[in-house]
Image (spheres, rainbow, N blue to C red):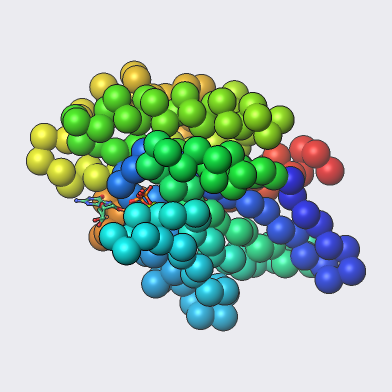
Length: 195
Ligand SMILES: Nc1nc2c(ncn2[C@@H]2O[C@H](COP(=O)(O)OP(=O)(O)OP(=O)(O)O)[C@@H](O)[C@H]2O)c(=O)[nH]1
Ligand SMILES: [Mg+2]
């Protein structure tokens, strides 16, 4: 839920990166963290296992300018993609204003993408949110992988509501800011509607 602090003139929004294990959620956040002006960002907090799999979440607060005198701050989270961390995923979705689904373009991960999308829908419901209406962007990541699934095939399987989608190669930054900006734009449109 968007948190508006009138005294401090701040708007706080939460965007969650969701998707199957190793699809590149943390890599998106790392790229953003590395490229953003130091004044505009807080610390990137990552709770990871020894093998760099996300254990609980990654978190990055980001300032994206001012709207009508209000500082807008986006709090970016990733969930742990590994199937057995479902309780954490549920918790991290609480109060989400927008979701970015990061899909893995490797053929062997197509079933994991579909499963993660079902899991997202269920876990949003658990938090009283709805995948059909929440601000939502699809990112097709790992487009550099040889034999990547064709975009139209991925869209047919994963695109739910004619949402905007972006192709990405997260370690090189391709598509990373495009995806984030689209999500932020949608969250702000939603906020305008609600106010
Ligand atoms: N070739 C290629 N590798 C990628 C891409 N994006 C991420 N990777 C690699 O995939 C691996 C997993 O990336 P992470 O960002 O840790 O994946 P994650 O989604 O956070 O995984 P969990 O935390 O386990 O859910 C890393 O070795 C990344 O460098 C991409 O677009 N192309
Ligand atoms: Mg991760």
